[in-house]
Image (cartoon, rainbow, N blue to C red):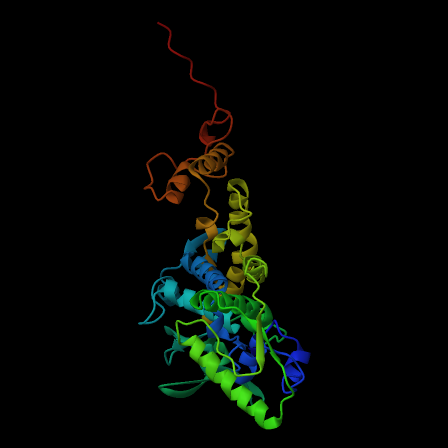
Length: 409
């Protein structure tokens, strides 16, 4: 997608060929080179710091969450380390990636391209062997007769992949089959940020090179007009490659500087506002991409909780449901197998907050002390698995029992 210069009007662009129209340096640069246009695509958008930061925060946050295979049997829930999916999802999905890098890469694909693809490799007997990452720009969903299949083409050739053999995580989009890239949905907002970034780069590289107004003293014929264009183009190119910032003009032309300082053009305000807008698009708290202008110590703690609940949790649910329906057969799902992301790390409070949480859990009788030790990565101790009650925090086995009389001397 190409975004034209955001600071020139359609009337200026359409009338630039008319000798009677005053020429500005900006319009001439646009006419001669066309290099003022901003290209917004999945790769160029990553050059904008706010976009890169949002994608990194979301991808790394989801990738760092522990991911395991669980099995629920009756009232008991156990870690299913004996299932083939456990090693693939928890440790190493393929020879090139760890579980962290696989999820980080796939989530970045979902955010940048709208779709993240992972092919499930099974043996002839249907056993899980490998989870292979597929690039979104090399993968498509096509209809073959009455059946939908995924097609993939890379350096090793082309392949057709059945629906049940592809983990397809999608971003929000109008289609129920495919997701849509957040970058393409908000190309204009990102393009404004790239334009402001380019402006700042060129302003400082050029030593604050001003724009100006070029006016013609006399009427120009077509041949004179052509000579003017060539002379101007040569002058502008020489100006860019030279330390001399004086613009040499052909005869019978007037040049009037109309420099607008960046602060008067609200350059910094534009960049700040654009950064905040991009954070909103990705639903990332501004302080997490280093925008601390309106952050305080108290609301940052609350925003961290909001980030886990309202930003990461929807993505976690998206991933869990897609993995569950592709990794496990219907029989396995009926037997209680499922995958689970552990968000405890993101919601982990301060030592004081955790101590209060554990205290209420123990004294109210819904958590034992060895469970607390496990959450704190400590080994269990004998006698600490017995539940306590809030009545003097005594063991349940002693509740209602007569107290032993103290021996008399």
